[in-house]
Image (cartoon, rainbow, N blue to C red; front, side, top):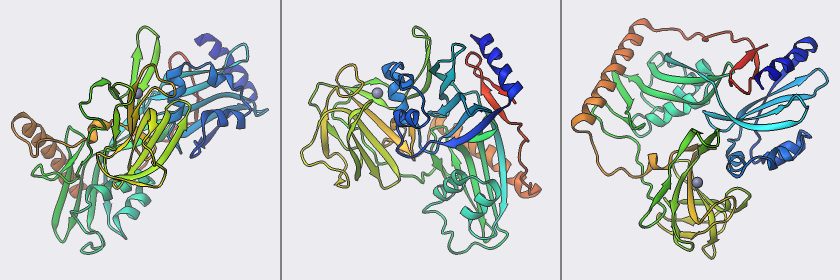
Length: 397
Ligand SMILES: [Zn+2]
């Protein structure tokens, strides 16, 4: 098959292929997208159940690419579902469109960002890096700890150490921030990301409060969250963007936290589904329900632990269970990662791990304060536009 793609490339090079970047529209379904692009709908219907479900988790404003020839004929479309898997629609040698879930081959760079304050941290970080994600993570990290409206002076340093993934030469997915520091009136306020993915101060005290609870009494987990897994029997790449709880039909489903119902309706993949938006911006999802609790509607407030519906088997489901999802923006995250933590503070081995992380960050902060590095873009990535269906690697223009 790989050879066929090499052959396919040839006409593109001869007649010129163009890569068009576009963002996945908020609220657009895979089917309406196909209709809009005048692509055959069997591209969707030929997918198996699990892959069809995956199309419902395409994050809005996902950075997608489309390769067209000089007659505007589509040769390939790449749609990232998360930072590990993407949907590839491609033209076969028989000039039929097929879709496949393939891994994303990405590159990672870890950078220390040094920014002297000019206006406010959010704007300064955005201006220097062009990344809204980085700017909002910074603000979130210091929320409740530093009041950026007072005390900040021009020239006070901000430092962030983070890893950013790049796909086809462009940043994608949330940057992973390992640590950040801001100096106010000579006082250095520092925040570190521990191996559990959460942020702590230098003493290991926690900033963020996670108050979510499991959505069921006596929960029994049957499938965990995974961004990408190779299925050795099916020879496919799979993602499971939530946690499954096995339960009898009719078992009550409970809201994981206080919030407002943002969706209560039906979707092809997830069946009868409720989404709840919580105060910290996260959205929880409860799929495959048999029925909603009477009176549940979009816009209403719910309390933590409040019953919202009943376990069922609606949508693309192979047996009664609750599929429980958690989203930051429109990106799926592991719901179990934000559940209420039982222990507070570190001890023993965990404490040693934290101290190692902290000390490593502190060295990076000190180095940045000394060197005051000026940020320069990593590379002039030439436009890559074609992803080989077998090697999953992008090919240069
Ligand atoms: Zn599931």
